[in-house]
Image (cartoon, helix red, strand yellow):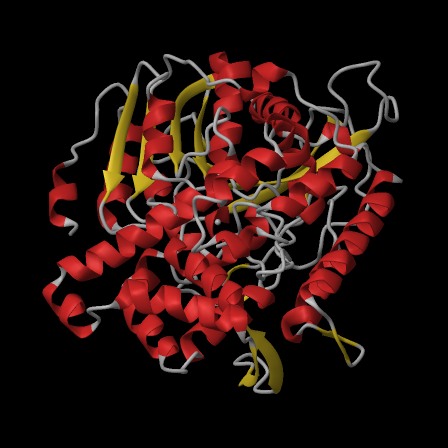
Length: 525
């Protein structure tokens, strides 16, 4: 998942969009729109019974809908526990796609993919990662089941906040209707838009019913609706948090689990975020210094980067850049927090990380073009997820077990990145939002580590800036049949990014009772 937000906290999600699906270039085959979109209000059907539907997301040109891919709605109850408020008996609809390998599956147990975010749409991102997702699954003769979690994307209702998404675009130049806003004014405007979204969503949805526990029960309903005895879970980023909750609540329906870029329930996402980012930054600077070519070309990369961030925060600059999508010029503010947040974003992608030293060096000399491209791309992808669902999850099960005071104490130890988290939904603003969001509070047990004896493959990238490798090790300690691997050179997410973790992923799914051959890791550096 990249965190799609500005330094002002205009985030789509805490964990971002890059982990919605494995990071790889788009499909090699042409894309065509599906025949029609799913209706805004699907016809109510029997709860727990799949209803055939037309696919609403772009598909490869040679794909045959109804044969190679089948799409459905799955009606599930909005509330899973009676007597806790909300509208009794309300039914919501999950959008589901079942992708079949050529010639059909040779095994009855499918792989079910759990996307990141929280709030990222797996179906809408599928067009960008079709081959990366399907190739390893089809190679072992299994169906791949991709669905949008409750409150997300093509599922109904989707807890989208278009008013917040529009604000993120409008504030690229920190100007509204010709008026230049201060950071404080921009933060207040963001809060106003979030509360407007909250009021609109709460009129038609119980925001306390959209969280990992209810989504885990949805996964079990999906397994039963598919008519299979067991499934294999594949979670990425926040999807690992959801997978762990399924392991806790419904272990009997699982054959194996893959956790890629692990976000365990017992960690504090917000308080630990500054140190996790700084760890990845230091790893970047150290790797450059240790490389003869990089080290000699950029001998003072760390000090020059931190000096640039401080200088731009003291004296932000208003510049004009060209939008590569529209070829139109647009004004943008560039300050140190923007550079930090874009560096954070670029660390997610293992391919782009190798370019970062040169991009940083160019920016220290006033050439921000590489960062500009990342910035425009981030804005373009901002509507691929559901901000309301992200906040409902985090306000229900993460923020209640954290505190603003703890975050502020932690930020005091990280002055180099501190300002990026002040006025941010990945920092102090989320605590303010959650006081008013109405998501309820999870049982304290939801914040405890998951113990399991299910076969589990745990994967981590060396340079991951938000779900560090030690989170994966921590989760694996409580999983008696877990295999943990850290991949050098990789960022946020491993499967579909490099051949080594992808081959190990496939081998594990073939035989979860044996650790996959990891000899390829030695060749990755």
